[in-house]
Amino acid sequence: MARTMEPLTRKIFKGVLAAELVGVFGAYLLFKKMNSSQDFRQTMSKTFPFILEVYYKSIEKSGIYGVREKDQVKWLDSKN
Image (cartoon, rainbow, N blue to C red):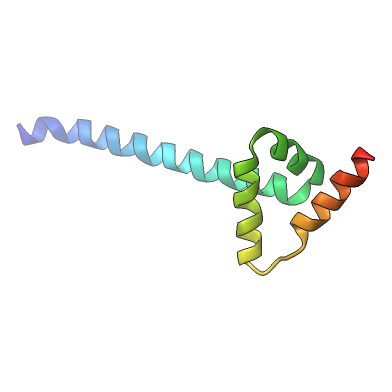
């Protein structure tokens, strides 16, 4: 019985591993896009504000400050 479950276990493990790799790669691409485009961050603030908050907190923890404030100033200026 244990031998018949082994191929199924391997398939499940490969599926989970593939899903995790896709998730990590997607998160990297999202971070890279937010890090390079202020307009994309504005879109994210309207669509997914909680993701933008995670972005701001992560860059602040890494020692980069002022991005949130620069974004808010530019977005307020563009409204006026």
